[in-house]
Image (cartoon, rainbow over all chains, first blue to last red; front, side, top):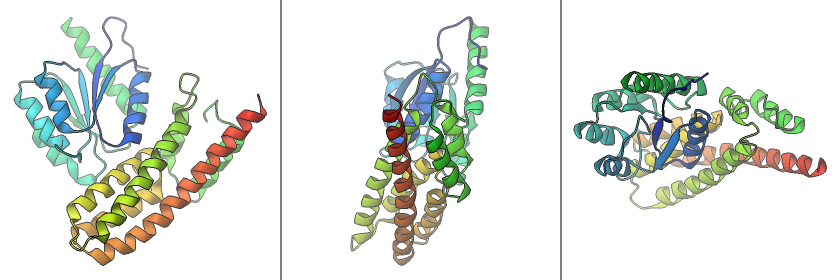
Length: 132
Length: 144
């Protein structure tokens, strides 16, 4: 069970162009009381960071129109956003190297399990609470 | 099992699981449905079916072109692969994986043959999903 008795809700950015995946991941994130922003490609994600938006966790698909997940991760890290936890969530088996080379923290092949997401959210909460 | 789903619907899902049309991921999705998300499974299934139909339409158009762009074809297949993995539509996902191999080989014939298989497999699962939703709705009406 995810516990967050001290701090503000976890801010999650979901970068995903597949509607059903967005819906399921959003439902899961809501179960952990996350504040969720959804974008449909890597460029929109990068633009949010360029606009000064802050997130605690980013869940990112790999293959998307305009800008891919790994490309977006690379650009987000290049902006100096080293604190945000970035999770690659691709459908295919060959995406791990691309995501990890780009600077993702974790790689989770679709489908994301609720328990796996819960563990990651708890890690983010624990980290936030240490920093407070 | 999801407390808010009717027994008939769960029976339908169990039969799709036993025939390999769905895998254990679908069972996990059932568990996400609760009082705060009573329509979660219905919305998930609806989105999957709508997305899937659109994607199959796009794949048909792409493979109909004189000069096929296999990267674009692969992009559409990836979308369906991702959606099917997420809802537990195992046979659709596995067919997408085969499809991607033919995209890599740039084999138009291979892609066309696999698209035919994909159509059969997708419409089989989406037809059964729609029947499940209808049954759920009828049972909901009956208990009002």
